[in-house]
Length: 134
Image (cartoon, rainbow, N blue to C red; front, side, top):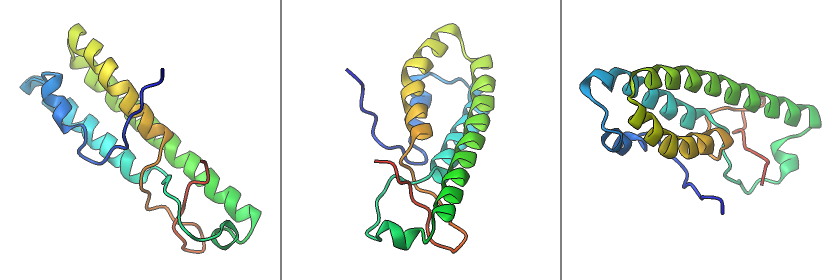
């Protein structure tokens, strides 16, 4: 059975700092990792549906494809940043903390990368970008 992970909001990882028992020595890496997650949550394309018909949102197929490509670029950049910050964090975690982090963070970060989180991205005509996957 697949575990359902609720949508994340910026700051959502804050309680996990205590669960993972992040020490003062590890705090800088944790803060960078959490800030990167929060940034990814803010820029990922939204899964929220709007009432506008699709043809009003995208007047042409090329515009729709351009918007989709921008979403993929945003997701790839966020993934690269998260990978870098996760490596820095894991470098300072104990083996036990890494095991716990894997159990707690993999589903959460996967949900961010797969995502239905708010975006400030706009298409060329200024309309709010929206995810078209259901």
